[in-house]
Length: 205
Image (cartoon, rainbow, N blue to C red):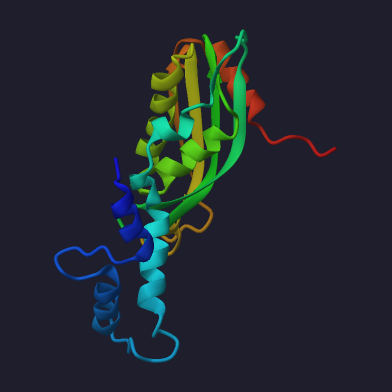
């Protein structure tokens, strides 16, 4: 667990690795690619980069137990709970380029339910780390399964990866879809089909 003093260092941007801050390393990197880190447009960029990077990786300093604590309720309900179209932004661990899209989460309660707002918070926690989409999908599903022991959990992520769009194959309209199905979502085709039907785009009213 991150100590309060460490959180203050992270927030202030003063944490250093090997005696050199992220800001200082970024200033050197700008020079290495042929830029002038002292020109007007780039003068504040290294500080902005460090602040942005720390925010985008803030999930390392969060704990699912703290996020879900106080938001798990004993309820007599055994039908599917779905939270769909959760906006998701993360960084690919291979190129540090963003991937983004939507996450759909469903579970069938056994004895407890999770406060609905906590599910997007859980998604954000794992997304704000260096990730691959496959691991991110599994982490969300497994955490819900471990915390409330439902009959099953289903998670589907649909995302576009800038490492495919901006570089490499440069396929601008490609999309990756990953799923994690646990419990009855894996065992029952009927349950999976219900989940898939519920996350289809709604018709316009």
